[in-house]
Amino acid sequence: MQELELLLAKGRQAMESGEFGQAVRAFRQILKEHPETAECHYLLGEALAEDGKLGEAIASLEKAVELDETNLDALYTLGDVLFESRHPDQALSTYQRILDQDSGEAEALVSMGLVYFSQDRMDEAEACYRKALVIEPDSVFALNSMGDVAYAAGREQEAIELYRKVISLDPEDPQGHYNLAEVYYDTGELAAAEKACRETLRLDPQFAFAYLTLGNLYLDEEEPEEAIKQFQKFLSLEQSADAEDIRNEVKAVVEGLKAEI
Image 1 (cartoon, rainbow, N blue to C red):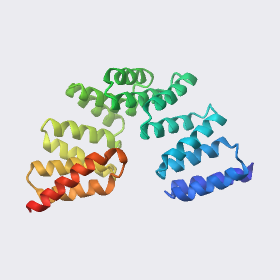
Image 2 (cartoon, rainbow, N blue to C red):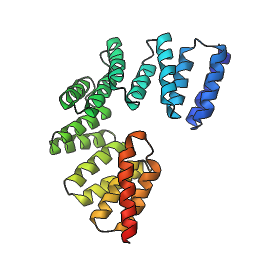
Image 3 (cartoon, rainbow, N blue to C red):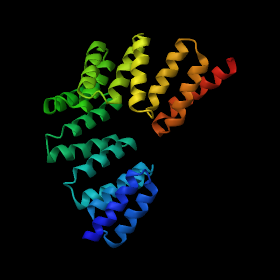
Image 4 (cartoon, rainbow, N blue to C red):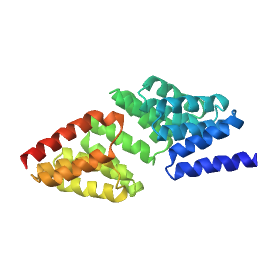
């Protein structure tokens, strides 16, 4: 058993170093000798997901849950990967399995809300977020998400107050600053939007969409060369399949701006 823990630790270390392919190989090697180790199937699923192999990740995570249905981390990761793989109904069922075991899991409610939000089922999303906030009133995850649904419903001031609460609870949360930047940008408060974007990037220089917003700000200020720089940073960082349409739009804008300069 001690040997198994050492082998798992090596795989985890590879994951922490961002060596996901190496981690996958390590966990698969372990499973050759310990095929019924739920924790290893879970870690393999995580590594596969990080490596972009979502179908294989789902299979591994499902095996982990089959072996240990009480592993909430595995269920959360499975739900998230199913959602990312565009299987919303299965993701919802997975998050519900978490709540069936522990109705106090606020994160599962927020995750369900995100699925509903992606389907434009705003009332159901908001209901999930409100339930989560009853359980954890200071949940940054729930407050950010509630701000998103409030803003989508046209309740701008409520959204701003929610994002400000996030920042007051966790000043180091880049998502709260970025959400605030988006509201400020959409309402024409460009100086405030830029300040919030800069703070987002100070906290997380890899926050791709903050560069997109900065690019739009520079466009509004008729600074095309600066806009191009920001858009190119966005394109270099944002590689997800879900962002393909917006990437294509940004590429077209960049090409158009280059032609005009």
